[in-house]
Length: 109
Image (cartoon, rainbow, N blue to C red; front, side, top):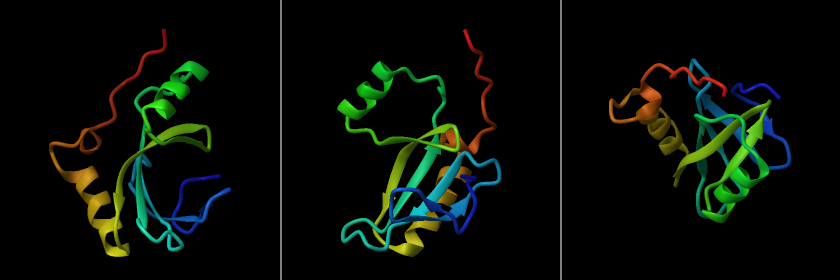
């Protein structure tokens, strides 16, 4: 599944509504959820996750998922639909966010 606006994440009631140019950050809308209406996902810096690594994230209550062969983690949630867009823009433009900088090189060992 490609990360593009209008696609639905398989197995969930989430639709992608915003994608950054480099596809490192994207926002999904979850209209059926009574609490949070949106989720902002960010590409993880480490892509070679062992089962032990994944269990560590899950035990820490950090939601991660592999979409189209790339690992993403939940960066933020949104309470309403417009907030999805403002938070995605913040994550990609604010100087204090790692996602506003060019993607660092990751060397495999």
